[in-house]
Length: 358
Image (cartoon, rainbow, N blue to C red; front, side):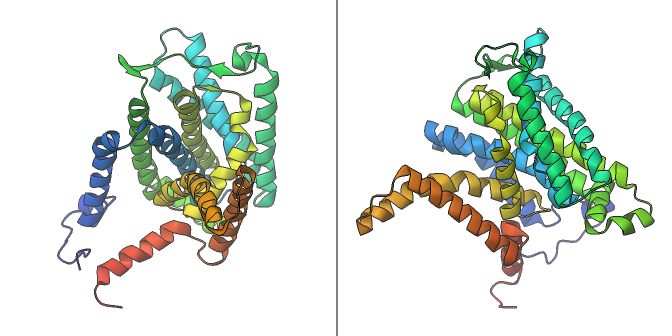
C-alpha cells in the first residue's frame, strides 16, 4: 500500500485546498517535471525532439484549451484550428510591425487576439447549443481560412502566402536548437497547466461545470450564463491561440493557412475525447496518444506485414490510422466516455487499496 493517504491530515484551509491533496501525487508531479526538464534533454535525440516531444507539448496546450470549453463548460467547438491560426498570425504581425517586440509578449498578445475573436464567435452559444453551436464554430474556421489566405495584410503581403519567423530570442537567450525549443515549450505548458488547474477549481470553473451539467438550474441559482459561456470561450481561445503561436514559431518556423485547417480542429477534439473530457490530465493523455500512434503505426504495420509476407504501403498505413482513430473514438464514447483520464483515476484508486482486492 505504497499509495495511501492514511495519516495525511490537513490542519488548515490552505492545506485542504491544495491542488494535490495527497503527498504522493505532489511528489509524482514534481518528479515528472524535473525529469522532463533535466533528464529528457540529455536522453532524447534530435528526431525525438522534433517529431514527438515538441509537437506533444504544443498540442497538449491546445487540447487543454479545448478541454476547458468542451469538457468543463460543455460547449462544442469545431473551430480550434481557427483560433490557433489567429494566435499564430497575430503574434507574427506583432513581431513584424512593432520593433523590439519581445517574443513571449507577442505570443501572449496573439493569445489575447484569439480570446477576443473567441468571445465574438462564442456569442451564438447564448442562443444555440449542441450541433448548431458546432456548426457556428465551424463557420468561424472557414472564415479564418479564407481571411488568412485572401487578405494579404495578415501575411505581410507575402507573394507565396506563407510566413516565416527569424531567430527566436528571449531575454538574450537564442532559442535555436531542438533542446532549447523543447524547454521553451515545456515552460509554457507547465505554467498554463497550473493556471488551468486553478481555474477549474475556482469559482469560475465551478460556474462552467454548472452550465455544462444543467444551464437552466445554474441560472436559477444565480449563475449568469452569458458571463460563464463567453468567459469559457475567451479563456479557451487564449490557451489555443498561445498554442498556435508556439506551433507556428517554434515547431514549424514557416507556415501557411493550411497548417491550421479544419483537420487540426478535429484532431484537437479527438484528443479531448480520447484523453478524457473535463480533465486536465486527459489533455496530455490524448495529445500523447494522437502524436505517438501515427509514428508507432508507421513502424509496426510494415513490420507486421513483413512477418506474414504482405507489403504495407504508406497509403495503407495512413488509411489504417484513420480506421483506428475512428474505432477508438467510438470505443471510448461507448465503453469509457471519460477517456484515458478515467482509466488513470481507476488505477490510482486500485493502488490505494493494493494488495487488497476491494
